[in-house]
Length: 180
Figure 1 (cartoon, rainbow, N blue to C red):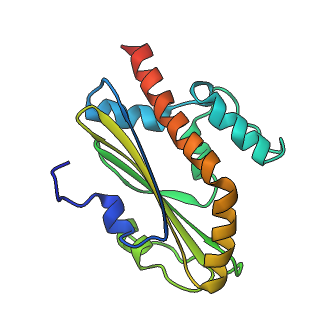
Figure 2 (cartoon, rainbow, N blue to C red):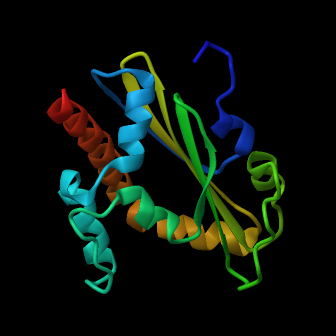
C-alpha cells in the first residue's frame, strides 16, 4: 500500500481505545498471502487452537482441518472488506443484549457509523505489502460501563491475544513455505 494511503481498517475504525499490531516477513505475492490467510487451518496454528480450547474450557472443538477464519466468522465477526492486499473483519458485541443493526450495503461505512453505549466494536485486518504480512486489531468500547468491562477483559487476555496473532502470522508463513 502506498504511504499515506489509509487502509480500509483505518476507514472502518478510525478511532480506537485498544490496539495491537504484529507483522512478519513472508515469501509470497500479495494475492497468494490473502488466500492463505483465509484458507489457513487449525493444524497450522496449534498454539492458537490450544489457547481457544483452554479459554472455552474444552466446550468448543476446533478440528485440525477446519478453517481458522470460519471459526472467527461464526461469532460476532463478519468480513467488512477483502482485496488482494487487505482483509478486514469487524465485530460488535452489545453488553445490553440489544440487537446489533445491520451494516447495510456498504459494510465499512455501516460498521464505522455504529454507535451507542454498551457496544464494543472490534476490527481486525490482515494486510500485505511486498513481503510483509501484518495484522492489526482495534477495539472501541462505547460508554463508561463498556470501557470499564473491556479494560478488565483486556488485562486478562492481552498476552494471549498477542500470542494468537503471532501464531496466525507464523501459520500463514509456514503454509506458504510448504506450498512453495
